[in-house]
Image (tube, rainbow, N blue to C red; front, side, top):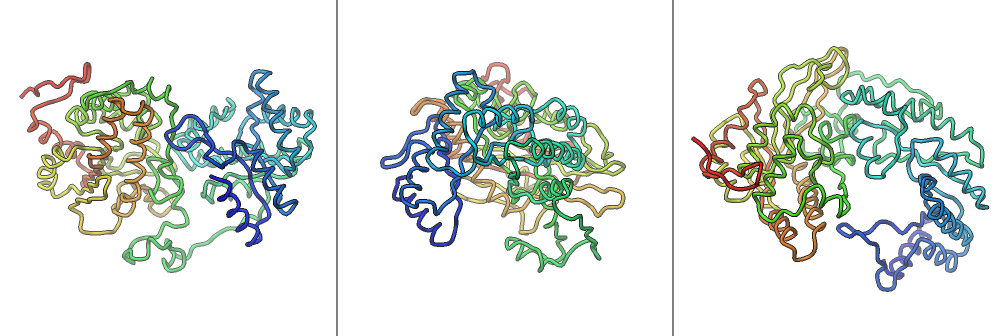
Length: 506
């Protein structure tokens, strides 16, 4: 931002009684690897610190970020980072907030280095509660956070049971917090990264005895919607069972309401990493081959999937790969499940001794021409519902209700039925913007005007994003039938080995 915008923000902050400012430069804008100041802007966090002190004296308390893992840098780089931190402090900074970490030894050594550099202001450790296995993995991968072996050994055996992961993770992080508060060096407080998810932080505070434990008794299995329902539920049917209190109970890719603030974060890739993963595709055939390889676990990630396919995805890997070779670029899927045990190693989730169910679900990008060929086959099956939308917002659907369609649910002893995943128009419209944006992020790892960037831009500009639900969860593979019929009519199939278009055998 130019200085004028900083001045407006600081003036408004003072006008409204805000007294604390976190001053940091931030990351490069989306699609850029290097950070450049705008004309009339600041180059470094210290420039903002100086500006605040010069123009507002001591009105604001100023915080800056600290990075414990800088302790692992080579000596020269570590000394330079510490020098820059000290320079900020000397300009009038009041406290340091750290990046999230889980290795107490690394943090301890970093704190000692900070104090040895003559920095005496308070250090506030940044603590990230562990909500779910997938969320934990995603957050630590994006921040390149080192995970102690103790955490992995305790959590990984229960990675498909989010409640267990949260319970174990709460105790692990609470133990780390106790050690931090006993460390000395002027550390007397903690900063929790809530990520807008209340429950994990609340459990952690209770485990630390920072808040009283309160038993909540529900007289009914639901609450009156008018007391707790968010505004975007205002026009829902009254019979819809409100899940507001626990709507973030399973806030990862598979178990999560897409309106949750934890759903669908934009994950970044460096240019070199992305090019190494996905090469330099110049044809739709090559794009289809990449997606098919991912479905067969021959590719570790896609822009819409930052982790390898889940075990349940591999049970339908063959038809998924075939779909992609026909030109349906899948980014999300789940097979039909009819009463699998909650302890099942592939399909299970939630507490023990329960049963889980799910409808077959597919989400994919497709060209307008192929979508036109597909829709008659979809609409001939009364069990299939779909939404299709392009970047402009042109919506096609055979669903006449704005209400949610539950596609995953579980039945467990002593609990009301858990319904963690739904499909609905409002959520799909919100996810649409993010899904297309991820495609543009992919395009931007390639040079401007390059064939690869033009190709991915063309796909994002012209293709439709589609989700399909087969509502009969007792039937396993019926959801794929319309795709194979439409693909066969097209007469071509992209070869997974070399990306060429081969005739489909009869």
